[in-house]
Length: 169
Image (cartoon, rainbow, N blue to C red; front, side):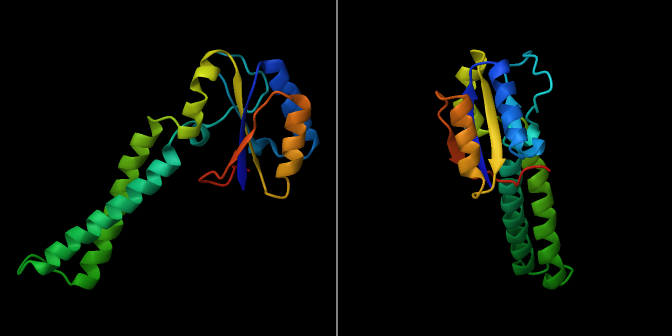
């Protein structure tokens, strides 16, 4: 799955584009609109927390870091004489899983309060009143999506990236 990012100048243009994408059988769950707070979007599909924030990458980083930290703590506990009262076969996986869970929770809390790095690049334009459109498409559908965008918004500068999560259906 790939994600296309591009700006449009106003809500009517975004509505026209979303309608064309829907007519081309792009699922509504694959289209996300980000606008300045207070902008009335009507029936445009507003981006959710996973598109706006750094939640998913932060969860992944937190889980990995927490798991490694838990595993290292388990190794230290096993290595210290008298430190571990349970077997290493029980202690190491438990600490790794526990650390991973705590790390994911902490990372998620941090990620919810951080804007997505790609969205940050468009912050000035969004603050100026433009709308950021995100469209998720398979590599096979990507050229058709880009053709629709270029037809409706010839001045748009579409940029493809690979998102960290598949789109919500």
